[in-house]
Image 1 (cartoon, helix red, strand yellow):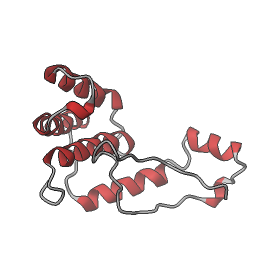
Image 2: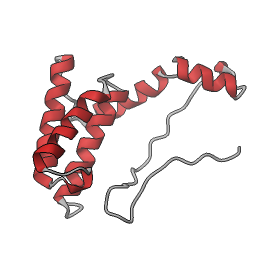
Image 3: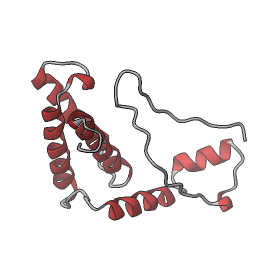
Image 4: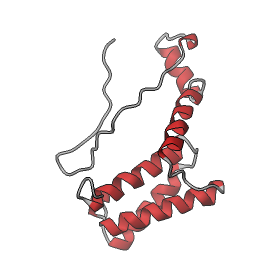
Length: 140
C-alpha cells in the first residue's frame, strides 16, 4: 500500500492473489471466494468489484484467509518464498492433468518435451479504468 500510494489497489491485488493461489496451488474451490466477494458487494450495496472500498477489500483478505484455513486446516502462506515454490510446484504438477494432455494432443505436442516455469514481475490490470491484463500467444 505504501509503495503504490493506493490502499484500495493493494488490498484488491492481494485478495486476487489469495483467490488465484488458493485455487491453483492449494486446490480450494473458487466458488468459496466468489460467494465471499458477492456477500461483500451486497453489504456495500454495489454490483461491481470496482465499487468496493479499501476496507471492504481488507475484510475480504481476512475472510479469504479464514476460508483457506476452514477448508485445509492450514494458514495461507505469507512467506513469498513458500508462495513461489508452491506456484512452481503447481505448474510442474499440472503437466499430466487432463486439460494439459488434451491441449498437447490437439496441438501435437509430445509429453516428453516437459514443461517450464517463467518467473516475472507482475503487471497490474486493476489500477483503474485504463488498465487491463491478458494473455497473448504467438504463432510460434
